[in-house]
Image (cartoon, rainbow over all chains, first blue to last red; front, side, top):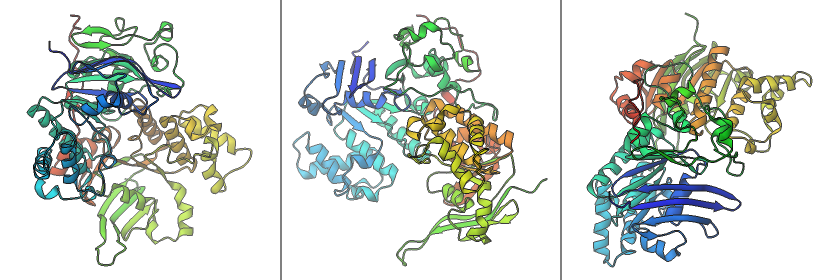
Length: 327
Length: 273
């Protein structure tokens, strides 16, 4: 087994009075796509931003974040600046939040190239055009001279991905990169990301709330709830045989393929606010399998199959098909 | 066959630019459909396909440039504001953004009571009971009545939005992406609520969505819009399982990963290696 590219252990992130990530561990291996799935408030975006060192000063971070052997938790901003844009890159949800409206797309890409290596303008421009071409923008040479507002939403997102990959990073962290896009555009962009991954050994950490996106593109999945690990493992295994009741509930409540009409199995209640977490397992108040003991301790991830971990006190007592909990 | 609740014929909506030389944008182009009581008709398509423009026209929030909208036999496009006001309670919207649809300064009670007050149907004795009844209908505890939207979860806010729509005793709900902004684990509950209300109250539902898996589950019929035109229409299951138009096929193929989600086949023995 090769060393993972990114190893996160017992990560805790505190913002003001709240602890939003509460002891999270996961790995990302070179070349793979890890989907981090959870609903709003689960801590998935904060985790992504912590790994990239993008959180404001004053954020409390403990635990370990090792990227290619280098410890980043507590490292100074210079350490991040040496990595960001070169070895790890970020793709945000809203392209316009990273694109400048007053420079052409080509200029911005060329600047990204020149910020990490000494190249003259012509060479940097060539690299910029090549990157636009790689993300599937037709007639890249001409489009590089366009401004972001002249691009469609899908093309802007491609341009942001081009900016992320222009320096051939080892890890791209994409936070809901296609959520704001139409479904057909979303599918094309995710397919394009798959191709990029095949061409290079680039790893992708994809933050998403959409299980179907994870199902179609990821190699592994990490399901989070209220800042903690719920379940992780190879995507096919976790989706076909979820062992944590929360994962099972998410899967059970998707509209089925076979029948139409009727009631969907639904999880009762709503996710807790980070400032008002229930004691013990944060999912217990909504969990159909919860017993009194669930409210006493927080469950730790347990290995239940090769590479498959679930955080649930009752993992060994649940029915074989956990989605039946919601029947 | 009973008369349809809503009958839309050759609906045309265009938006004209401020500058005279820019031609107007044809957002809805000769769209026709009917909707019966107790039925869910889904409008699907990408942004810009004319879904929301159609909804806005049906709600008469913006007068269409052409075509006819008949609701319970009344031709809405030929009525003036005064006459429309009588009919408006019959057609109620539920919007996508649960927080954005409620005033941040109004309590849940006031938000639900407002349509009753505006329509002159508020009496000090029966009003509060009606609000309690509506909260019960959307399966919210009476204790949320005094809360403000920011104290509620997204799913709870959406239930308040639905209760407010029901306060007017509508026959038609226009649901514009009613669950797409909600947390994953609360969506199914709202979907179930909407179907229950439809079946119990016999509501017609115009369900706007880009989520085809969801549409296949909730809708009886589907109309697929592209660039303002209906390219395919039919029973939800037929359109979703055997689409005839290439655009519908593209929309369906972009619903990712459904084939990798579990089916009803029994799971293999657990691997405890």
